[in-house]
Image 1 (cartoon, rainbow, N blue to C red):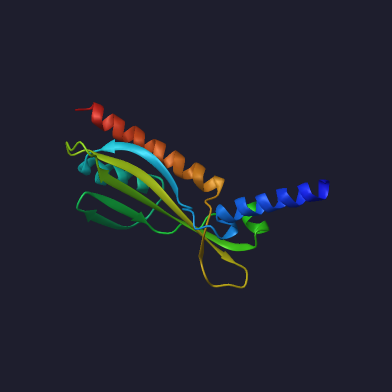
Image 2 (image 1 turned 30 degrees about the vertical axis):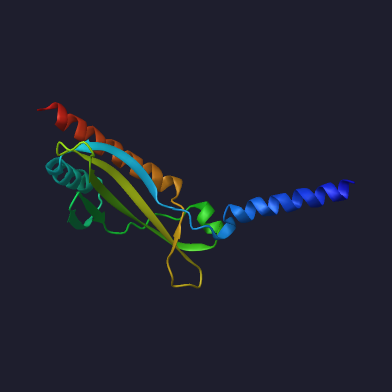
Length: 158
């Protein structure tokens, strides 16, 4: 009886694991933070100032029809213990700031920070997308909070 129960439970766990995508899941690995709202002028001027203050180097700025993005150059942080245990030799991440027009109009934009992290395994020259480390998350959260404070202060000054 117990052998039959173990077999049934194992089968159920296998089905759940297979349906969830398992180890080959293509889930979004980006780390995203909502910063707040700003005008387009404030987004470009304040974001560039805070990026420089936080030592992020702007790679490109792209104006889109309903907003804009600011891409930064890759940062190469120290490797965490979890990444070393996973066999990762080198890590890099890229910060992108995105402004999207709010649905209600009024020339206000929703701003968010997006981080994409990549790792390179030993013996490989290919970069693959990995989960963002806690250290990187803390740095980006600190940057986003500073940017949010500047946006709020700018809105109140009118």
